[in-house]
Length: 242
Image (cartoon, rainbow, N blue to C red; front, top):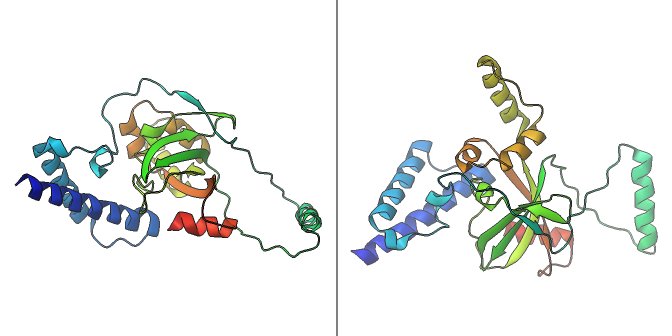
C-alpha cells in the first residue's frame, strides 16, 4: 500500500506540474479549473495520509504557512547590472555603429526581446531543484525572497533536466490585472496602488506568503549566469526554454 501511495503521489505531482506549465507558461490549458482542483485535493489528502513522502518541492507546498521572520541579504556572485535605454533612433544607430567597430565590420545578428518593467530577480537551481531566489537589490547585494517566489506558478520548482545553474529575469504584473485590483480597491473605498512595478516590489516584500500567492505575479526569465552549452544569447534562450 505504501509503495502504491508513493507512485500515486509522484504521478499526481508530475501531472499538476505539467498543467501548471500548460496554463501559466504555454497558455494552453488542457483541463478545467475544477479538474485541476480535484487533482490538487487528491494530492493533498495522500500527502496528509502519508507524511513520510513529504517533499518541499511538491505543488502543495508552494505557499508556506505563517509569517516570514524577515528577509536576509545576500551577495550576487556576478553583479546584476542595469540595462541602458534610449528613446532616440539616432542613439540606436550610433550604438549599432559601435558594435560594428567592435566586430571589425562583421555584420551582427540581434536578438530582440520585450523589456519587462518589473523587479529584477535571480533564481538558483541545484541538480534541477529551485533552492534560492533573490532580488536584484543594488546590483551587488539583494534580498532572499525564495519563499515568496515559490508562490508564482510560472516558476518551475523542478527543471526538466537535473541542471545546476543561475538564471535571471523579472517578476511583474500585467497592467490589466493591476487595474482590476485597483477597481476593486476603489469600490471598497481603499487607497489605490500607484503602478504595477511598485506594487510588484511591495508584494515580493510581504512577510505573509499567503498574501503573495493571491496576487497575480508573473515571471519572465532571459539570462543564464555562468557556463552553459550555448555559443550565443539565442542558444542560451533556447537552452532555458528546454
